[in-house]
Amino acid sequence: GTIKNPTYREVSSGYTNHAEVVQIVYNPTVIPLERLLEIFFKSHDPTTLNRQGADIGTQYRSVIFYHNTEQKDISLRLINELNKSGIWTEPIVTEVIPFEAFYKAEDYHQDYFENNPFQPYCQVVINPKMKKLEKFFSDYLK
Image (tube, rainbow, N blue to C red; front, side, top):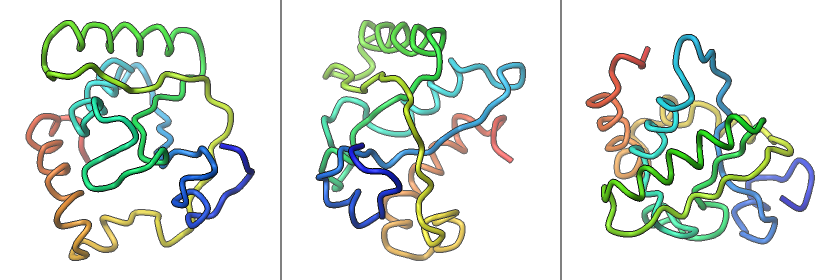
């Protein structure tokens, strides 16, 4: 993005070039990057540019921020394999770009689904994704 420590309001304006993302710290001996990426790609539509469901704008783009060349290479290889597999009718538009900085969202966004399970957005958007994750990746969920 173009500014440091942006607010949600600034990011959601679509004018800062930030993306709404999660930062994952993982142990590759417990779960390899390939599996995390598989979960990532199966939990959203990576073929829609600057959009996730009804949410539209560059802040909703599909993006992977890599920390080293190994992560970059694995990400690009998997995207290539998935494109060749024909899982989706359209090509994957997920960006693979170097990590620069991560800005944590305001407190009211932390654990949002857990703290607001009956909010309409959680019921309509997040809950179906959680059910999908539980179905396909239950071994990796706490």
